[in-house]
Amino acid sequence: MKYEGAGDYSLEDISFSAEKGETIGIIGSTGCGKTTLVSLIPGFYPVASGEVLVDGKNVRDYDPDELKKKVGFCFQHYYMFKGTIYENVAFGKPGATFDEVKEALRIAQGLDFVMDKPGQLKEPVAEKGTNFSGGQKQRLMIARALVRKPEILVLDDSSSALDYATDRRLREAIKELKGMTVFIVSQRTASVLHADRIIVLEDGRVAGIGTHDELLKNNSVYREIYESCTKEQ
Image 1: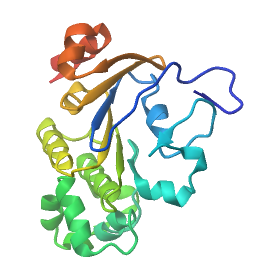
Image 2: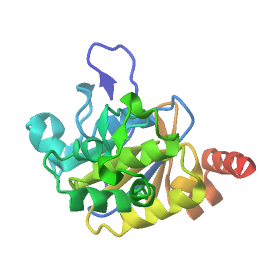
Image 3: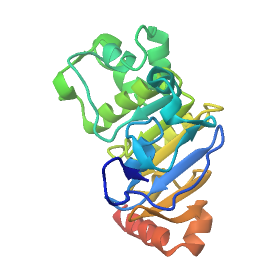
């Protein structure tokens, strides 16, 4: 894959499929192409070479609104605006009911801290969410991606500010959503080790695909990442 007008390829020799309901982990060092890869799913970038299919249809052939309904995307860098918690979460599904927002927050592991706020769902949010911690903001943004119950959920390093216990509960709750295909992008193996398959990227290429146990045994790139993450815990 390369961007239109670019001379060099950003991603090369990458081919895989994800079945409905699968969780796919994508891991690798900074700059290896993780975000570029998952950004192709909702068609954020036009490409000059290669293709991405969603339900067997090229993303280029989708109406943008139709594709937007299928894919929920939570970025590493979140956008929060001045308003209320409800308004920020419901931004993912305009007109969402309070119950729908609460359910999304529950799955995102954010309901408890929200309900502890004096205003609860009507609690004010400052511009850029400066009155919330990094972990709280990430959970609110994950809830925004979840509120419309997309067929495909992409979490792009969106749990990096969560402690390991909360991150684990989040993954377990998302796993309960039968039929949703989930892509988890991360630099830490703890976030992806329970994925059905893990794609290891290195310099825009696939360095390995397999389960945590398979990669730990047979893939030196993954093993190095795992050992580095283990030392940091």
